[in-house]
Image 1 (cartoon, rainbow, N blue to C red):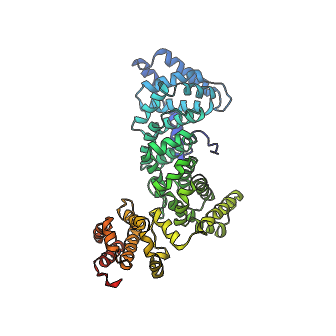
Image 2: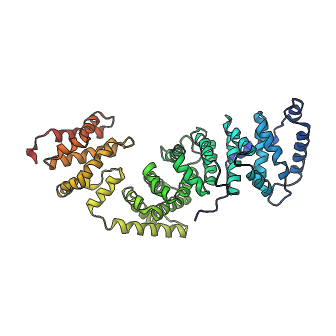
Image 3: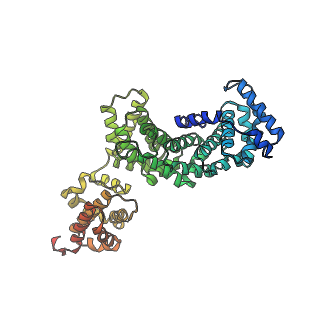
Length: 450
């Protein structure tokens, strides 16, 4: 069940402090009126709204000010002054947060009306605060009123720009807005299916939290950013189709293992384990192999025995997930483990690769199913995103195949791996160069060694 995440929950010190400054900044409304930008009736209503707002505290259940929604939206759609637009959006945000009638009125006008136009117009301005405020207001209305037919792709296009910002507060607020939007089922499928660039930037924010020993660009505080981004991934995994494709597309399981091992905050571990549980429960066939290759069982063992977890539910989840994965790994032979690792595309220097006995026992099995293993190794060599370790291991494995199989050279050439290995002899990575050279050496040797 998807959790009850508050609509458009945003907590950011810089964002809040800037909002307080906007509230008290003088706006020349009389000047706008004299210039014909604001009518005398609108000016009167605006002063009346300000007076009534000051007379009552901002809280749920107070006197509704929904009658001023059209005024604020209309001015937001028409005015160009940045100061005025920031002020109007702060007032609208107050209404969305604390006035149910105002929120309902905005929802009726969201799909193609003035409200939607005004908010997207603000997001197109080159002002991060204004755009994020508009995104927060839209998220509050869309999620709070359950508008599943909303144009989520357009909202994600704006949020994607903010996720690429070098300003930490901008990234933080954008991630928090996404947390709220992803409560809606259709919002999750639209994000994953139609906005891969936005998901990629979200994962990139998470990846930046594990680079170096200090908070990198775009990260407010490493534990908090990790929690917020993984929270978004967790919400995505409530969709079975997304749970099946998430790691395959963005390689998030090894990243979460690295974060979980080093996490200081228990809430970060909790949300990672919850994400793994979703991925195993809703798309086990697609994720078991990836979890085993990424050493999730070992990570869970460390969490269970090496950490004093205070949350009883978390301890139970860790134990249940470890038991479920043990059922899969316990039935696997060394060859099965090798195939699992190869299928993931994330080759590592696991013991089998360096074992002479392993290769002598299983080299003939590499020709099964139309040389499936050889073809998979060739795919690793051709993969644009393959890291240097995977490339080095693939070259090494092909070298063992050629060394022990008299016909190996012919099959390696047939699947295109020979040319790729030869090209890797000039790789920028020393280990890849070495393993590629050893593989080419085996290819060029006479068959008498076999």
